[in-house]
Image (cartoon, helix red, strand yellow):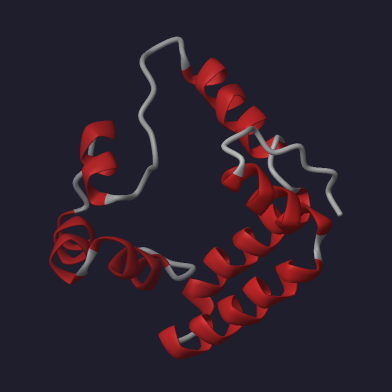
Length: 121
């Protein structure tokens, strides 16, 4: 039996029927199945996982870090609350970004069709 919230989180991630199949049979799934179930965001080719991870990390590091933090909190909050509470928290976080210089820079860069230069403020 999965523990530490495994049945709850898996069901939210993949749906009841897939969670039941996985939990009741205990069968392992491969990387492509995990990708199709939405359990992983990306599958790397053998020997490319470090390069792929670094590419993603550099992309995230180039974004506004205060906004990255708010996004992570909002996404992580999904598992700890109802949809209504999650939407309220997301709305508050979204509104809080309007005071950030990075929000203004991001909007201007988008309108001017250029790469944003975030300063993490």
